[in-house]
Image (cartoon, rainbow, N blue to C red; front, side, top):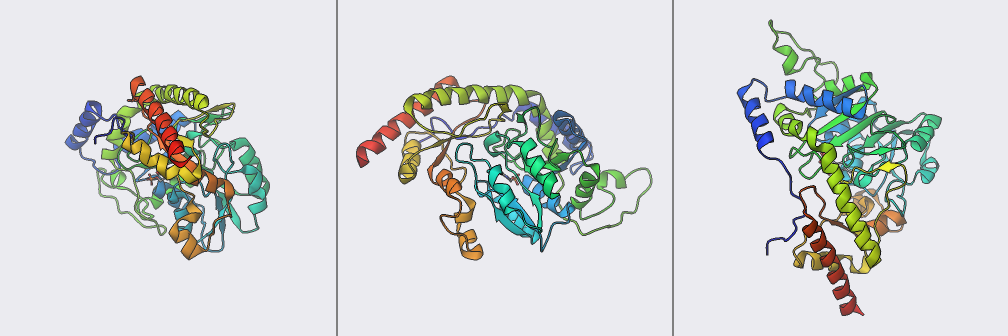
Length: 382
Ligand SMILES: Cc1ncc(COP(=O)(O)O)c(C=O)c1O
């Protein structure tokens, strides 16, 4: 059966097609003027000194750590309630991964538990602004400054977020963004870093093309310019076709967030009435409203998931706790019971459709399906 409400639907259309067509008429398919234009916009939108376009947020997280010389012998703190990109990139640097449990009410990393996890080898903390809800960056910055640690913000869900007047990238050393297929701005794949430390950003810019000191756009000027390799980098630049897909979305970014906010408010009202729990958005916070999740009885979660799908609702799970995934258990020795809040969220969470193209009727359809499914599951198992 075709879904009555798909899990996600992008809004890319004629404007993006036109921008891509113009790109194909020009010279640059790789990082060129459109990538630069997007970088300039991102920095000014966030109110930071600079941005660097990358292939993905995974590339962003990895290169950010490389640019901080994080590697073997170092430790990096993050949360097990995230997508595996956050923790996998730490493992790829050779540093030791240190998880700190999340809060029970927001599912964001519990800052009250961070200090206990800091050792003399700790180099950085990666807060994840989960579902678009920012971690308290002022509080985290005070901890980081006290222990001389770097902050790498995982902003894959959070371009438009703000907390106590602070935006992503303003207090962290660097903020990492994703423009993956289902993100608030989407180009299929895409990413960027942004922040105030131009030295760090320039190093990431060089690392995105193998550590070369000149990219295609500045090699082919009037006369051929030799390039040199200054350090061991990787390949992970944004390219102009990605940027062409992103540029037309800029003008819609805030209105699309506003629409998602409206949908979330409707969900929250309906689920309050049904006594269905969901993560809170704390006061003083503008959530980017990337994903809307509910928490159901962990013993019934998968039944509810299937029930919703049977009723034509697209669903997902963001996320099962990372430390309980097979690789993490078998290769790294994590066990159930280590991070109880992440385990609760991971076992009980269901993500519902949330995108600006959803109609009010579709929101009602989702809520009705949740109510019916919960009633059915309770009847069967009563
Ligand atoms: C929290 C989080 N971090 C990192 C990533 C990685 O992003 P990308 O797919 O752009 O590499 C994602 C992607 O879904 C994510 O949700």
